[in-house]
Image 1 (cartoon, rainbow, N blue to C red):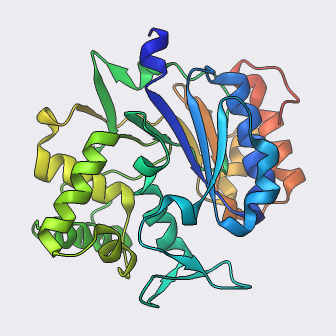
Image 2: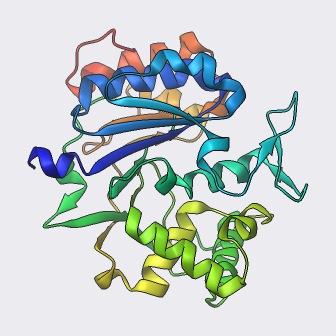
Image 3: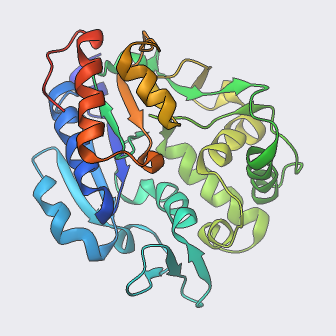
Length: 296
């Protein structure tokens, strides 16, 4: 992978004030294990810009949600959970994060967009060849997985937004270090507007249930056709994910092995772990990743 190809890649992190310590840890790991040719953009609410500015560097910029997302959204004073759109429609913070990720093309001009959430940390080098193969970009795609419950709501909403049948789309697209093509994202935004007759971000923001990753995956497979999308599908996960506290404890103790191909570890922010506990878990798994301890 040459420098020109690496310079076509951007890491995008959506964060906010309470996750500053996690985002700082993520940034340290990126600076250690990810080529400086790969851009890193951190997107946070305007009220949090000042405290996140300390993370800026030659390869990293910090920008405001309000300056990135089209449509004039603004955050309610004294609230982390609620935003309003230009018409005064309330938008939950979790949904606003989906809208922000779907606006990543306004934050970078690079073709390859990789989402690195602030509650993960790189533990090994990221080789761009893990993302791109003969010019095709990986699409996290697990056929037949997650076809019920909350995930099914996400698929049905994706169908509604994209003009597809409102049913399970055939695969799960949710994970970590998810990669998109900027050109496909822009095409998807235009497609949603054609289907709905209104700005794409309005339909997404006013959804009760929506997943940005399911939406993009359904667009690639159901509208473009994966073979014409510039993607190759893979079920391999580049991040070892701890979605539950017992998984994190088992990983730290060695009872759960570290995924062989993982370049990062996720300790989901809602596990209720202290900063010290998170750092200790990451310190204890690093020898198994072939790294020196103490960088957490």
